[in-house]
Length: 462
Image 1 (tube, one colour):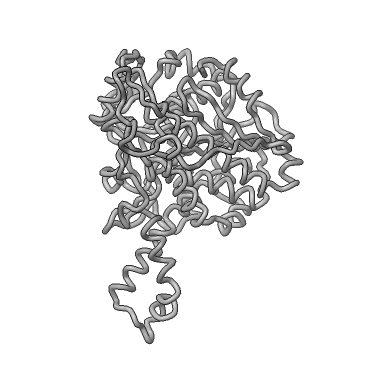
Image 2 (spheres, rainbow, N blue to C red):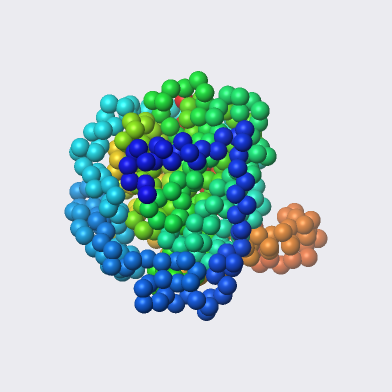
């Protein structure tokens, strides 16, 4: 259970895996070992359990605050509901923050705890000389391979065995990257910590820390994050691959970490990469972690959340959606400067509807500066597939991987030889148009990873 700062601190001390002796968990990535087939053992019994270990007490009482854009704070007053009622509300499009373990969340008493330790960061115009060294190392092949494995888990529902197994696979993947790419200079200059953070549900969050050894515990921390769970809103016991929501954000942050390691970058201030469990249950994992930051007096320079980064709606211009509600205004404006400096596509201001949100709200609600990027304007987003078995990489050519990646790899040589110059062309003008569109979609996720890298390097170099 992760319900107090003391408990969380103890767990951190026990689970930190320093680079000198990283453990090997040997997590099985094929989730079919737990879910043998779709029709075998997936219907819960009278007690709400399945033989596979996915269980939930649907009558358990939870204290929640429903999101409501019409309210001054963006949230309704706390109310008690059952777990079943919470799921039914989500199915109807009403998201919430579940504050059962953190009942003082967002109160004046709560936010006053960080007043003494949190100094306001001044965001300077982007001027890093190191970001350009990291960006060429980004690999869409790495992201595709990671996303294929990540979506192979039957579900990443936060109260399932496969949800827990997926987080442990993610942790092990980060361990492998650290062992392969962390330089001796980085290991000398900083503590590299990889942490599985347990909660009072089955799935764990994953936290990666690069802590320079010459900084104090009060130095501001840079955080980039995504949520690693998924859900089937029709029935949480059913298939939920979660490719876009939020497998895409997860591989965005993971690839940012890998490329930063490979580049040899050493941050000047603490830099963290967060993968939150239980976002679909009411920001459960990020609330636990943000609460620990508050209770231990941690300072945050800025937090950037990536939730759904892969979709480019047909017939629309590719853009980065900069979320404008429930975010820190100054950090959000600085995010726009990063996009202008390092990306070759524009940004567009957008807003979540009044009753939707993501993990950045755990941080703004705690009084920390946080911002949020999504795959474009909200109205052009991928709304028909998430929270269902359809949230797959191959569901549409509007997704950046899957079919599009295969198309580009299969035809890029011929089209480059005969189409790009438009001399001696064997392909039709329609084929050329499809090639260029496919090529653009292929690098969408890498563009978001460019933003993740720029945010991490620029801010942690303060």
